[in-house]
Image (cartoon, rainbow, N blue to C red):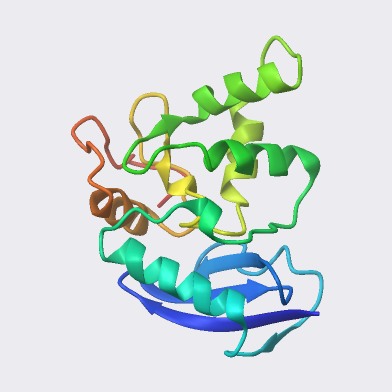
Amino acid sequence: MYYSTTYSSPVGSITLACDGDSLVGLWIEGQKYHGNTIPEDMIENNDIPVFDAAKRWLDRYFEGQKPHISELPLAPIGSGFRQEIWNILCEIPYGQVVTYGDIAKKMAVKMNKESMSSQAVGGAVGHNPISIIIPCHRVVGANGSLTGYAGGIHTKIKLLELEGADMSRLFIPAKGTAL
């Protein structure tokens, strides 16, 4: 059984989902793939300890603190490949950005392959079901393009600015998946 609650944030209303023990979803209102990893209907329940912990984590995050991902029990639902990509996302330091290519290189090493498609990585990053906490907003194009955020380009910018990321070489693409 899966449960949901909402959280009001500076980037809009957020839906949280859990299995009773672990957080399985966090989606910003209007986000692509909202709730698509949950295999059944969610029951609204605002009185679950993991939701309280997630809301405190988000409060601290939006206050500019640096809560650790390890403070929350996370159980994102996805294939083994996607799980590995999401684990790599969890390693990106607060306020830093990496490229899809950087992640592809790490994933190639993990899979004992010579190379890995940045597009395959992009698909897994884009389908991250626990956005913000699993920081997919910290992934940018090789040329500094702010592309590929399911929550929207302006949300990605707000999150990176909140974290104090160096935005000097980053730009909004004229066209692409983030617009």
